[in-house]
Image (cartoon, one colour):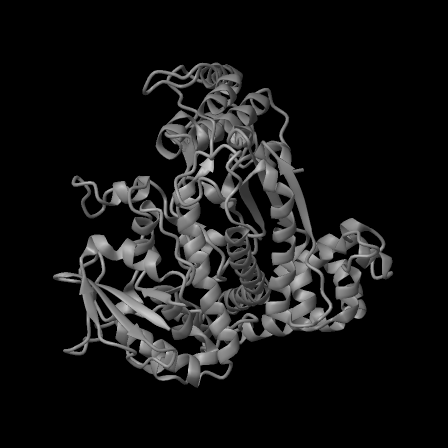
Amino acid sequence: MHTVISREPSGTGLRPVSDSGAPAGEPRIIDAAGLADEVGTDESSQVRWTWDDTNNWYPALLAEGVRVDRAHDLRLAHAVLRTSVLSARTALAEAGPSAWDRLAPVPPPGGPTAAALLRPDRHPGAEPLFDLGEITAPPARPGTDRNSDRNSDRNSRREGDERPSGPEAPSGRQGNGETLDPAAELAAQLAALKDSTEPGRLRLLLAAESAGALAAAEMHHAGLPWRGDIHDEILTEALGPRPRPGARPAKLEALAHQIREAIDAPPTLNPDSHPDLLRAMEYAGVGARSLRKWELEKLDHPVIAPLLEYKGLYRLYTANGWNWLDTWAPDGRFRMEYVVGGVVTGRWASTGGGALSLPHNVRRAVTADPGWTFVVADAAQLEPRVLAALARDERMAAAGRSKDGANTDMYAGIVATGAVDSREHAKVGMLGAMYGGTTGVSAQVLPRLARAFPQAIDLVERAARAGERGERVTTRLGRSSPLPGDSWAAVQGSAFDEDAGADAQSRARSQTRSWGRFTRNFVVQGTAAEWALCWIASIRRRLWALGEASAEVAPGLAPAPFDRRPHLVFFLHDEVVVHAPAALAEEVAREVRAAADEAGRLLFGDFPVDFPLSVAVTESYADGKG
């Protein structure tokens, strides 16, 4: 049973809808302030609260201490169903573009990004407070760096005219002013699920995606415990005392002086200006073509050591310095602004604060509340295990299977099969298979891996060939890759012109291989993201079922409803951090492990693949990572 929530001129609309999409009762209007009471009263029933975007509704409920067990996020589900090959022949996928296709992720209300977007002095073309680069569209020639998620997005969303709402349907209103019909959209989505070729897989994906949106809102609400005094100590030790506005920290200023002296530059040279610094270095005969670390490390010149140190400290100062502390953790909590499904593969992105790139040198500030602790868990070699399960390659799965109750390093297991002669070769070879490595050790090792694990290697090779032909590939649960786009087609077409030269043909071949690398990885990384979503959904349910800590345990500093309960506070692709009363830590660790097993069964049934975790119970996040 769904209850569709919408904003109406006279209050909040509630419309009961059956799982088939048919009305299941009379729609009604309640006072907007009464929604928390309504949800809290009905939460014991199996209602799936359905809304346009989780961040439009759930944060206000959490602020009232109300937790939602199940939800259906129409925006997230729409994006999947419009582009999945499993639902390609449904009415929803074949319909013209609507307002739902134009919906952008909504940042959590009250956070720094939302505040910046609502600033009255913002105007078209103004610089945003935080870079949204993590959710930009994939380029026509995607990169192969395994951390370059910022180059991907749902560029398959379509633009066009708004679909009009029916005259009797309750309507919702998105922040951009477009009128939406959530009840009609839900009916269309349920019909698309029914008419799809794999309704079970898609249904699980949509449920996991919506559960992820609930978890992301809860992590923002609870916040990651953050000791501002420790963070200040870290910055002071590395940079010197906090400088006055507009000035550099003392250590950076001293290094800037050393840089100028080493290349005989005037005192006015600003090392933060890359063009000016490169010109000064060229004049001094340094021989640097760029300021990339790997290139600078090859050079022998007195400027290199202070410059490399400056670059590292400058990164700390600008990315996680005092301004970051004031903006993102002013009250002893870092409240991440996740974008669920913000990357084209289904991975999460973030709109600011660097939640997905939290550096090791500030993690010491992440300290549990008194009487509480962290349970830090990350999945070991998640992507190669996912590849083995996707391909149903039993020999590769066996290489990573736990033995005698102990977790097995999958790369060491691959070495034990005789496929390669070292763990490093196993790792480089598998990463090359999944990310398209065609040179060096990866190219040398790959043929041996193909002989040892033919099903696994064949799966990624077929995905690459599909991408090279401009076709879509699909994850285990049904998220499909975007088509390459018009620029890709134009370059490919130009290579077949009668007067096409060698350069045009070379560009087309390079672009073809690049898109093949993208689709090669899409099926693995996207399915790994689905496993992680199911893991989070299971953890979230299991933690709540543990109940509250005993009255003797001091409440944590997180707001209700998590002040006496273990709760998720951080997520990074294949890693979670749970903040828990110390007395419940071992129970939490068991539930986190059980959730990983459950996620594997949900995706791959009884296929014998293990998803072991590294789990640490610690009061400091810095001690929970190797």
